Length: 230
View 1 (cartoon, rainbow, N blue to C red):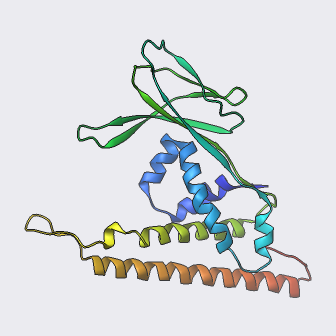
View 2: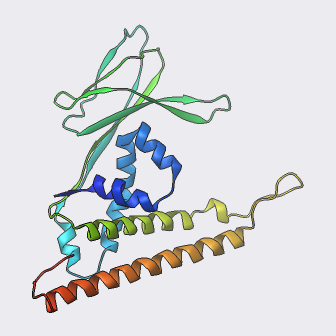
View 3: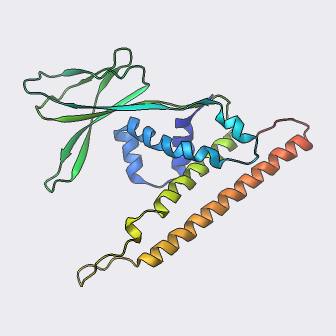
């Protein structure tokens, strides 16, 4: 079997240059995998050459995830053990929710101890009113073992989905009020540059998939190996 987390960490994140997600992997790993699994789910159908690869990739189990909020009550002694009811997960991570001086939400990573059999999470800091946000994650798996080339192509598919999301972002395209103290980049130029980048990445991915399809067909024809995936 091949885990989704392997594709995400060892392949997709090599093509996605986002320091925010790198920090999230370090400080809130369960939420990181939950978010990236959504890109992965959309990326799998993008790997569609040769056509029979689609059925090969569909076999397996999707990831499971959930979350739990807990506010420290008055008089709670520390450390505290919270019965979340979230049992059987492979991974649990937690953050403390706060606001900065301007009212913007911020999160601080905390160490947690998780018992997958009982669903209990233990934390050390129990200041009354503190809001904890726990995330839980169990990895998804492809039933079939994927080759390094298949893993790499899936990583490129994840990158394609990732880039499409940011290319279609609404805020950078929206016209903004300007004055002498604030002149934003030209929205039309930004949109044009992002669209050119998206098309270039899509063309590269399509060429990679065509070459992979050709290589598989060559091995079946010349090598005489039926159902070959490289």
